[in-house]
Length: 239
Image (cartoon, rainbow, N blue to C red; front, side):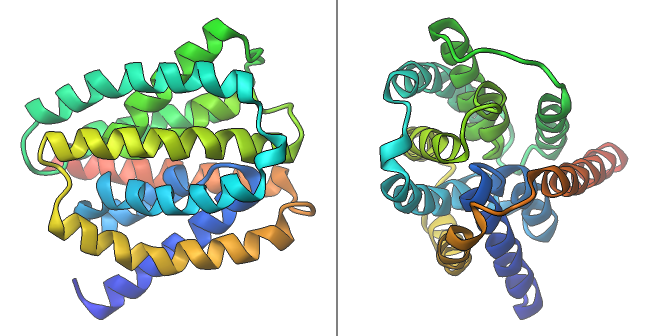
């Protein structure tokens, strides 16, 4: 990887983690498609590993606001969704499945803009947790299904509950990636390249969390993610 590519990757990481720390999710849906265009090896392992470190910090910061009951159901769903995702990755070619990834990005954007109002009940928490596990393990984008459930909750509850789920979920997903041979020494080094951005995002997001205009930020994030996802799909189909 060239120095310019590394600098771009660190910038994407800083922006993505700042957004995630402020609104509860964002690194996956914003950072993943952009990092894939820089170097496919960033997805999904390195993003999941750096997210694990970031969400550990964020869960500690927002632990008082976590919906513990909902988190338990969602973790059960996340575990159930990770198993078929790992099996899928084991069957796919060793190179990054770009077309599948691009499709998941577009599905995530569609979920985020759907306008659906779903209550966080045991059945929906299990279902969205499973979808989060599937999307998170394959493409490191596990936020939108759970954000859909908590979209009307206070900001601290959204950040705390989603971070708790992502912390446990990324550990489960990384374990699955190790088992199927999709996370090793190279992915570990790439994870380290994203950690400065994670630290930056954690520090800066604390000041932005209370005053961030979610409307404009959300639109910008989803637009960038949709464009990047379309580029990935078009490249995959054309190649």
